[in-house]
Image 1 (tube, rainbow, N blue to C red):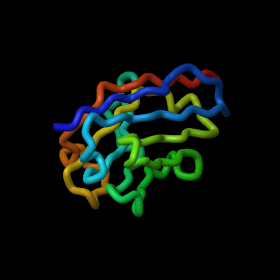
Image 2: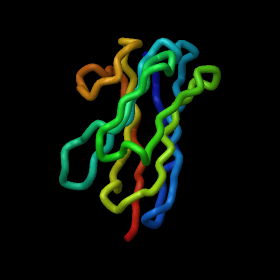
Image 3: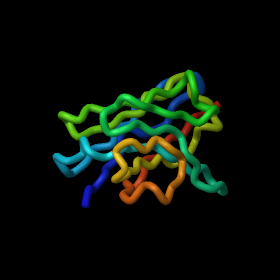
Image 4: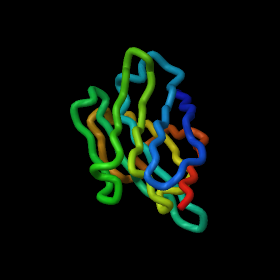
Length: 125
């Protein structure tokens, strides 16, 4: 069972940048597709981005396209989310998740078996 730990959250002004990291406990990290989700106060958790196990496929929700970039370094068992041009509406707890389907880059939460505890991102206006 893979354990995921997010880091890199914090407080940033609108227009600023943050890079989130998601470190996995297993050397088999490279077989999992991974994704980022977020949950804003009073709202349901929503999909943000995903990347396949090999890194060859990525997918983003429309609201972050052109601003966020998902990537991974399988040698370091780590996934990243580079967030640029941040907006107050990006404020949320960000979660990383892993799917045993190596090719999966979709948005269905049920396809992700493993989840981290989340990291808070706050964007001030």
